[in-house]
Image 1: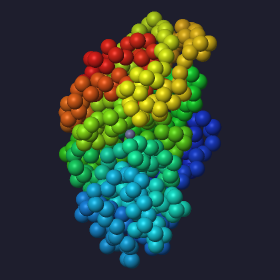
Image 2 (image 1 turned 90 degrees about the vertical axis):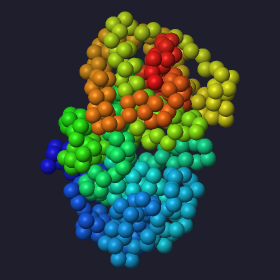
Image 3 (image 1 turned 180 degrees about the vertical axis):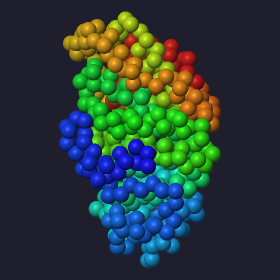
Length: 431
Ligand SMILES: [Zn+2]
């Protein structure tokens, strides 16, 4: 058993003590089980996680074939719900609610989309859910939030965590290679997200939690070491990936917010999802992987500068945003206003930068994983390292890097670069 497994089991048992409070963290998840194979254990696992009564097993055509039919066969009387190319949107959620209304609990067999749909629908009705993972493609299996599209907007909404999260390593290792590589991309963003989030805390006094990083600290080196073996069916390498994805998600359980693993790098990915027309079909984690490299390069560049940066007053130009974002401009104006610095606030922030920059940049530099190491890790698993590898137009990617800070209220190094007049020239070197 690796240290990550022990830490996850401690967390589930409520024995993990948050650094912030010293108090143990109540875990809403009853069971997280990772094993070479879970075949034959499906019914017992669900029972132990408190999932009882009439169950709906929710899959799509692919995941039904891979694992859904096996789970159904193991559960007598379960209702089979096989969705046709589902999207995590409000319309699909309504349909799923209708099709499962006579069931006591939902069992998702799939990855991000199916898990989010089941968490969202079951939470709204006060029913429990569980998930059998079919791909190690993202870190949202254990989180209580969901990503649901309503109209044109992709929203991060509160829901609840599954009662049981089950990883069958043989199934995960046989997942489509792109989904495994996407999981690696989502798993390596710890360093860049931490630098952004801690910098925001130091400079602007926004909330910050150390526990999400404490949870990943010991196991992260094992993930980097595992990358070259990840695509060859090596189950130990798969455990290293699953553990970091799980621990990253548990960090969100501690802090109650996604900030610990979703800062500038996720902003760039969200920009791609919102504005790439047509969307190239790249996966969340694939985008996060290349954006993590971008953020690591930006952070390394700015942290290497000994002279304290001086932030400039940058007015929010509603007309420019209107021209760029159309009907989405209002939400961008709101995001920028939430983190706007002007007048006395700006003077205060610049005074703090002048006084503390050297101390801060040394502290932040210690958290940075060198960009070359991140790139080598992705490359070792055959994952994308440039937007073109994913079919993303490099020009559009440069636009995403240059403007991603306008779509979210989270403050980080994209903002630091923008407010010191260097974002445009940096973005021009990316892609
Ligand atoms: Zn992510």
